[in-house]
Each structure stands twice: as C-alpha cells, then as structure tokens.
Image (cartoon, rainbow, N blue to C red; front, side, top):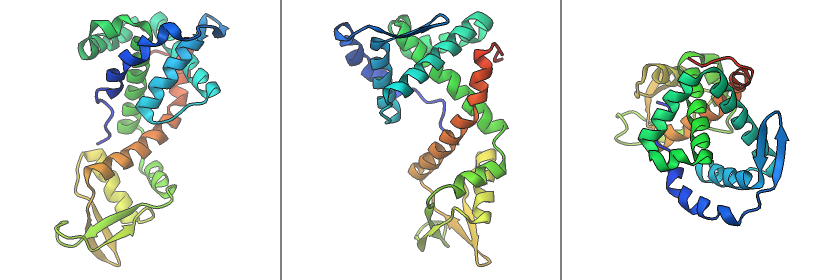
Length: 228
C-alpha cells in the first residue's frame, strides 16, 4: 500500500536547476575523510529536496544530509559494487543516459533509491502492530468518514486514532494488501470510507516514521555492512 517505488517527478525540474549552475559560488563547505561538499552542490541539493519533499532545509541540515548521501554511496562503491550496478541500471532505464552522466543527479537518485529500498524492507518485514498503533496515536487527530451502507453515504466523521478495532483492521490491510476498512463503535460495525488521498496521507505519516527507524541501517552502510 505504501507508495515507494514511484518515478521521481523532480527529474522534470532538473534542467532549469542545472542551467543555473555556472553562476553559483562553488566554494568548499566541507572537506574531510575524502568527502567534499561545495556551495554549488548544497544549492542544488536544497532545491531538489524542496521540490521533492516540500521541505526547505536549513544550511546545516542540508549539509548533514549531503554528507550522509556521499558517505553511503562511497561505502557501497567500495564494498558492494554489484548492488550499486543494479541501482545504476535502474537509473539508466528510468531516467536516461544524460541524467546518469550528471554525477550530482545520478548520486541524488542513487541515494533516493537506496533509502526507498530500506524503507520498503522495514515496512514489509519489521513494522509491527505496536509501532503502527503508536504512529496513529501520536497524531493530533485522525477524523475519517464512516458509513453503514458500503460508503454510498457518509454518516459522520469520527476521530479513529485511538480506536483499537480500526487500528487492527488498518494494520491487517497494510500487511495483506487489502482495502476493506472497518471499525467497531459501541458494538456496531461500520465501514471506513478511505479514498486514495487519505491513503497517501497516512502512508506519508508511516514513511516519515520509518525514515527515523532506518537511521541505524544508514550507519551500518557507512561502516561497511553490505546490502544484498
């Protein structure tokens, strides 16, 4: 259900970003242990991240993310070249030779694909019910429409973030790729009318949680633990 393997819409914006590259300051911002970050790379990274995630990173956060990206790619280049070759083949097929030949674009997409794969693995193999329950209960509210006639009409909107029957049903649907959402309220069962937009919103919340959980996986990659 989680939408992780979609084509990245930011590619259509790349040409306008990199046409401006020659006019940007390329001074060095970070140079340590073979990792180099320039002002030019930072500006391009912040622009791509803003277009993709809708988040305007501050300078320190953007540099930290870019260093992490470079460390992970460097480690995989040294320790798991076959895995990286499979990633590069996907990039060539999806985005073409021109984008692949641009090192900054290529590495940005490489990192995104590696990250998405770790999220996807965690989502399918490691996300347990208690974690999922905690994610929902951490929300300010989760008001969803309920119905007693298979969503032909909506009775009302109910905050279901703390409803155990809904939590269990939604988690079952996630793990079994089902979409029959139900809830029990006062011993009466209702259908929960969740459209594609609501699904995407909930998926995004789950994805952000998983990003935090996979930080240890990133650290493992930096210190030489291979992905298979």
